[in-house]
Length: 601
Image (cartoon, rainbow, N blue to C red):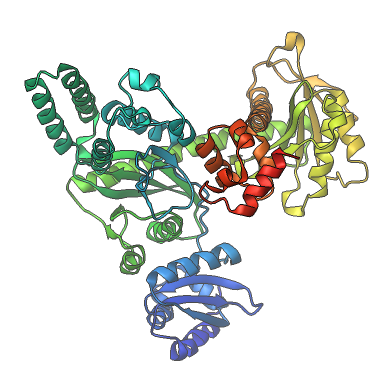
């Protein structure tokens, strides 16, 4: 048991001085460690609630017993309290807070309303005031599907600005009725603006009014014997009808809603969130968090909403599966209505989110059990002291010595940790055709930055004994205690499943053919190979798009784009005078002189 009297005494003392205002409070123990960070509409009232000890869970009672000091931050409103709370939780990692990682970013669709002929684009990043945003969408695939619909029905341009400003004849998309051809004047600015309005209406769920308007236009074109235009309009109506036929009627009345369900199994919570925008299901995504002692579903869900909507724009409504104690505070902070239902169609939507959370949990736990079993096998076959918590897998990639890169991927008992992946551009040009030397450079650079918290239990290499010895040569002088280094070489006839495994001081061997552990290690190696090749291709592609403008002082990506849009090519910029270059928006006289002098050394 724990003695709660001292903690209660501290709380009651702080009730006397606590502000009756919105803000954030910190509970601190005798070692000056922050135990808990919370937000409140009224800090004083919130602390009073903690003094009613019989109404608290065992976990919170234990927390109160440890409290020896409190600190307060008064803020201007609930929204600011939410932001400050999340900043402090991320920084301090308090013992009794439910810690949720939200490292996902979701794609949106964006229209730049200040352009004469805006294109609808996939977007991630910081929002700008002059643009309209739609989403979020749960995946890039969902965005691609919507963009495909927009092309068929509304015929907005999809080309990049540089291509748009420099075309002298329409592209193939215009020929197949997927673009209205604004680049070469096939549509007026006013008519294109109407298409943009229709796209906005469509993305806001106003499909019926668009279809009625297109029908009237088609009839008018037919009456005027403009049959070519009537056919185009007919095809657009047909595409729109097809979309409506496949749409989920259950979401048709919902304009801007997130539906959130939560499920618990084996001490792991899954929160499943569905994004509904303009009557369309924009996809769903699961979040997982290990249960902290006796934390309730409502407590975890509240922590999730606080964290998630600090990083993502909130919709107008949020449907949730649990009633929250601080729902009113969250509503004020997010500017969204938070609702629960006990019956009806909206209750069924929430129940569906919960079912998806249960299914996601089942998949996660099944994968986890499979990985754990493979790690146990790995421990047995390779003589490890314990199942590995962190496996680092390395591979190299180059094209006849060009664009050489090394890659590191990380596997844990929870699966691949993609946030921990690292790429290494090979710095020494003399070794880019030598796989052994490249691996030496990569491993040496990795170990120079190694910290106790990211020290691997296993290093896995794609290669044979040569790679294995190269690693030990490069890491001579580094502490390799507790790290098993394993190399995988191709088997007979380079057949997957017949690989040989090598460790220093041990005889090389092959794992049982087509065994689960063999497949698992192949998966690790293949992931490193995929990441290395992908990194190499990106580096090569980047070098191919690099132009001489990149080397000019004062010319960044934006000025480079503006120059190319204005002149059309680097050759035209070379031939331009200082005065001509100065006419480009954003280019002052000094920068124009730098550009001119660069090409006329």
